[in-house]
Amino acid sequence: MDFIADKEYDAKQLKDFLFKRLFLSRAIVTDLKHRGGIAVNGESVTVRHILRAGDTISLAIEDTDADCDPSLEGRDLPLEILFEDEHILAVNKPPYMPTHLSHGHRADTLANALKAEFDRRGIPFVMRAVNRLDCDTSGIVLIAKNRYAADRFAKTNPELHYQKLYTALCLGEVPPSGEIQGYIRRLGDSIITRAAFESGKESEFAHTRFTRMETVGNISVVRCEPITGRTHQLRVHLASIGHPIVGDDLYGGGFALPRQALHAGILAFDHPFTKEHIELHAPLPRDMADFLAKIKKGTANES
Image 1: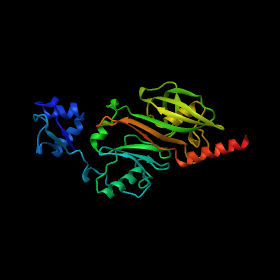
Image 2 (image 1 turned 90 degrees about the horizontal axis):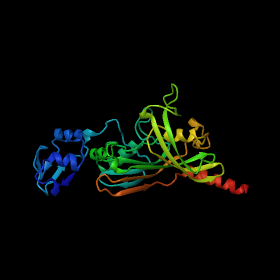
Image 3 (image 1 turned 60 degrees about the horizontal axis):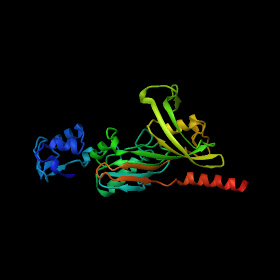
Image 4 (image 1 turned 30 degrees about the horizontal axis):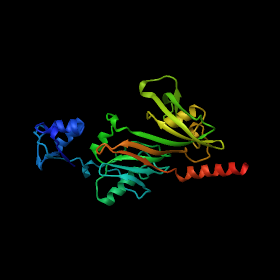
């Protein structure tokens, strides 16, 4: 990956450009040094090299076969790409597909699908998901295509204005809008189930904003924005106000659908390199749309 030194870095050390202009972490710079992956105008240099305006700085950021997880195998699975450039890729993950490999899920994940896609392109692939969705939650997952992009999306870079908006189908008539704040942690000895509490550690604090978009029969269509990112946050928060997500049997949503009716439909962020504001949309998946249509039809028949 190539960059051009601008006038601001004329007569300055290369390390200033790497840390202050590119915001590279020390870990990445150290790794590049060990790889011999830093060059200026085609010649290998140290980070103390003095730059001149217009110099071409080449960094070996791209992954190699040695970076890849040998246990990750490509699988021909559904893959809908919403956006892609040389740094990032966004996909619309279907429900019932885990994001990452785990025990019992070695060949049916989004990572497997992406590995197969990159194998077809002849490009080494490392799974670097910027956000992660539960297996049964559908919607947008953003992937960093190299170490630099992953580093720029890290929590140390809030200037990227990262925003996630979900659509949830909830039982009952949810208030028109509101915020839920409190603490989320595991319930008793369970390794899965969480619950909302009035107090807790700073690391457990959770904050959600929500707006009711419409009410269909006894179902509310709710737009949710998780300000924090705790495990099961939206599921726990909505259940805590008496409106669990349809199909979420873990938190009281019943079995009207075979999964929680939760969809990550909008993802917005400032591109870490071009600074362009990007807003991605993924339409409501068929199971949720069909469920709403059925409820609307039933309501119309009753009137």
